[in-house]
Amino acid sequence: MKTEITIREAVDSDLPVLLKYEQGVVKAERPFDPTIKDADVTYYDLGALMENPRAIVMVACDGDKIVATGYALEKPARHYLDHETFAYLGFMYTDPDYRGMGINGKIVSSLKDWCTASGLTEIRLHVYSENEPAIRAYEKVGFKRHMIEMRLRIES
Image (cartoon, rainbow, N blue to C red):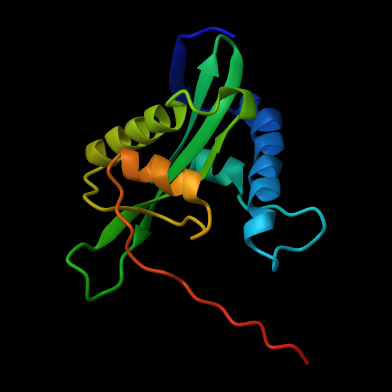
């Protein structure tokens, strides 16, 4: 394992690794969400995100090996907010062998730079309330807890 991590925009040839890491996200989130289907699940249309001029998919690399991912996507804000659009961050994944090295922070910083260059002033993301390691990682790079989504399963 090298110590110099580089960040770059994802390219089409990265898709096989990105799809594998997408399943890593699903696997990591299943313990926090009993409503995720117990089958193959696809969260993202990564190809469309990579083609979208109002989105960017970034990867962190150790040499040629992709070790972390993330995307930013411009979305419309609710009409009553002080911004018309915002950046939504998703697909935040780090290979388990590379966790705790600050790589997620480098991905977020890179996505933040893209947001700034795109004229976006608000960045949001979702994280499970019980996922304390992820919450700490996002707070470390400046995010603040904002809202809690609540759910109720009605059994028939």
